[in-house]
Image 1 (cartoon, rainbow over the protein chains, first blue to last red):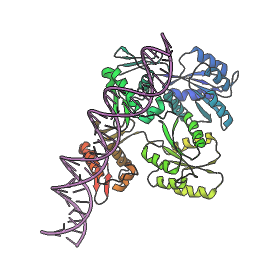
Image 2 (image 1 turned 120 degrees about the vertical axis):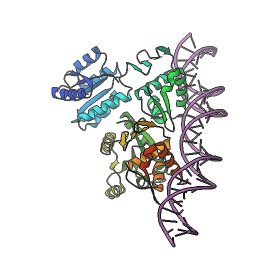
Image 3 (image 1 turned 45 degrees about the horizontal axis):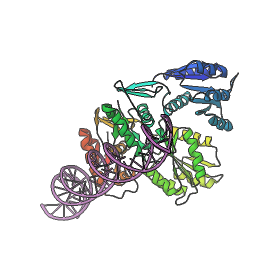
Image 4 (image 1 turned 30 degrees about the vertical axis):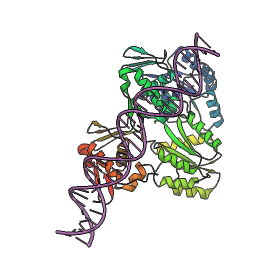
Length: 223
Length: 223
DNA sequence: TTTACTTTAAACATTTTATTCACCAGAATT
DNA sequence: AATTCTGGTGAATAAAATGTTTAAAGTAAA
């Protein structure tokens, strides 16, 4: 994970500063918007926003409007900030594709934890290029190079490798892999993973060894 | 916080689905059981359940029975779902070690909030790195280092050492070890443990001495 | 529809791990 | 000291998990 850029949209400058300072401390870059319209502008002009934090109550466009607008063009993760205890709002939010919901007042620690969780589960920050241990993965082009040579991967193989790389050094159970790479409602054979791992390994040539078997557990990517 | 896995036990599939869908949206993995017996089975066979949600009314074993059974072997957080307003039940529940009590009907939001709160206060799900007496155990990577040197452990050996370390300074009977490291339905020879202890000790080299024999009793890990 | 490809599943081979057992050594008991 | 337990050990066996191959089922493109 490289630098992450987060857009915070809130009309209260105090709140923006609070969030910004804390995120900065955690190595996260922050861009500010003081109303909904500005938030949209910034998001569309800067192409590398990894995540958006939206206050519900804002001038010009409120959080819901911004959310709807951006969702029609992008799947960027969105966190909504709201006053405590409005459940019907929350349901509306999930329908609109809000990823997380944090009610004010919140602790900055929670915010960072949620951001981390979201970025991890949405596979990092989307469109970027990662290079690790001789493996270069260009997510935009959907291409993978091993030692500079392009290899041809199927979709599942690509996603699997992507998940491995995102969790490098972590032993992953088959269940965990299924739940993250496959849809959560997939109830097929976990051994299917083995087949994909085998093909991935062979397509990766020597570098296939980077995918280790963790006996009785699952697999692990190690560079 | 890594991925959290929650077990939901309820005989109504509608209820299970409701909870599952909502938790999934919040990045929480869900495993379902449709009666008490199955809940126990799943909990003991899957070793990484972070929290259990039990309906009181279930076929085979009701929520109280499941709670009692699991509490005799584990401190996993338990949330009990019950019909509104039965106070005497609630008292019983806390005696049995129930962590939270939610009466139906409840809002999904409440459920997630309670889960978050419980996991936060019980210190999450223990995916961490522990270092003690020259033994470093990285649970994420599933690796163990002795005096800085990586040693290769089998799954059982790893789990056994994990249990020893978690109970450092406590003399553990073979029965207790079996009940915690092995599946609850294991009825084999308790001497099996001796074999694993032997291999563990030898793989740990000098540091094998940290696993003491408590004569007529069992074993004890002491740093 | 045909074709090419991907994904999944099933069957079998191989490897690794878990368990049992027999035997020995040392501790506790008499 | 003799006897009886209890734990240590190493080899044999059983069980479990993974690797590999092949084929069927599913998809998307031509």
